[in-house]
Length: 146
Image (cartoon, rainbow, N blue to C red):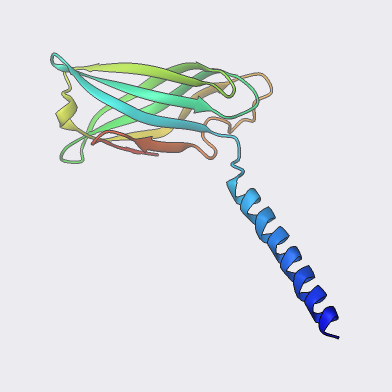
């Protein structure tokens, strides 16, 4: 009888550990997406140059990606609305893209809003590939939101 209970407990523990392990694995699998990181903000004279690190985790290349972007001043007001052309984004590869905003000091930008994908093209790409599951983060004092 005792041997049967021990086998039952061992079997239960084994099954539960398998379930927990598979749940942990399923939680770490991320859906394909584009991630954009605001990596640096550099003052260039009277301009601000923003450097972005972009990653395409889709299995297909993105041939063209343009995002509508809004820069906010320190008072929370719109300072500039623009289209940023991130160009091609190869599948599974990291790219760095830089954009310079003349007449706008970096210290005067508080937030950068990725307002949506204006253009997203690539062979075999889902229609929502550039904005679905888009992940954003900033390594600067500027907030990057979407």
